[in-house]
Length: 221
Image (cartoon, rainbow, N blue to C red; front, side):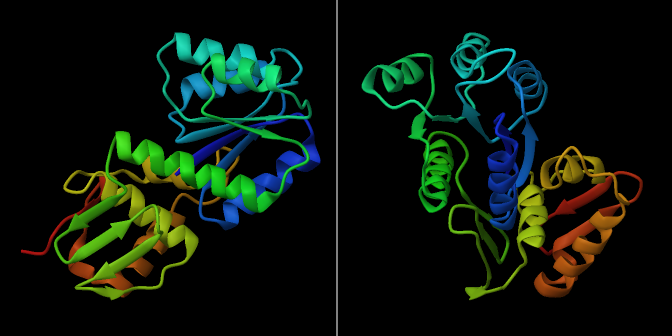
């Protein structure tokens, strides 16, 4: 899943990004409101961590603008303010949750997971089954024929993208967009490395290569 952090405190933003990346998310970071709004409008994020006090445009306006345009992405607001009025204003503009600084990183991760689970209940199921394979995005577990298979965070993220569109072709570019952040400038063939690792662990017959197009996750025939 891909997250956007809009936070002008650079040390905090980069610390959150590092931690959430270690949790298996692809994380993009921007430090001003206008850039945050543009990115949130142009890119399909699974969740946005949004500070209220931002240069260019504050978090209230960003949230209200996204909701007015029909974007239903979960939004977790962060603020150094503390008071019922601020919380009410944030929620009234369309935020899904609210966290006051300073906060525990463990609490933030728990809130992020809760919002993503809630979205899964109202949209696509967080559990996908493809033949003998079961991919649980909420628990971040993969089993084949009931036996759990240990995957790295990036392996799971690549598999998750294939499982979300099981039976369809997913291109390298689409996998890169959702699994690596927008600043990634490395070799796009890194996707092949992770697909090969998944084939070794899950069974080569589950992931088909569609020459010139990408990969398809499908049940073995």
